[in-house]
Amino acid sequence: MINKTVEIAINDHIKHELYSAYLYLSMSAWAESNNLPGAAHWLQAQFNEEQGHALKLFHYVNEQGGRVTLQAISQPPGEWTSLLDLFQQVLEHEKKVTALINRLYEAAAQEKDYATQIMLQWFISEQVEEEQSAAQIVETLKMVGNAGHAVVMMDRHLAAR
Image (cartoon, rainbow, N blue to C red):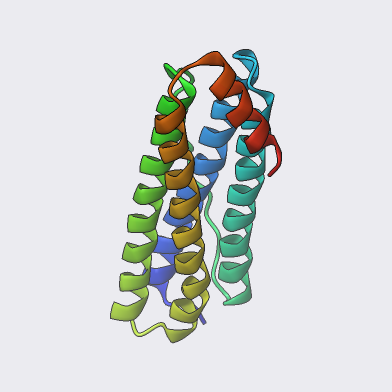
């Protein structure tokens, strides 16, 4: 049986995962409208991943005898000044998600909810990958700048995901 405090915290985190998906879908729409189909593809893959994260938590709460209570999701931003600006926001967002997952883990630890701590190990490892991937893209975009040729090449690289 899931601890009530942990259940409430996971329900809150489901909202954050769904917001992440919504944010990446918004970013994908911006990329499409700016003729960056590779970035749009990368961001749509991220959208799908975040939905999967929310569902993983959704199923966990149900499997542990808890109840999922969905919350309202805020509207994400829809404009960025460049591909670099967009991916800098991706990186900052992933850092925020990492902090949220760490807080969720701390809540499970405080409540001595060992099963949730074990489940959250997967999310902690996933966030290391998420931040590393976003940071690498940001650093590459900083090197190439906003030159058309280099951005096109980077867009093609992002399409390979």
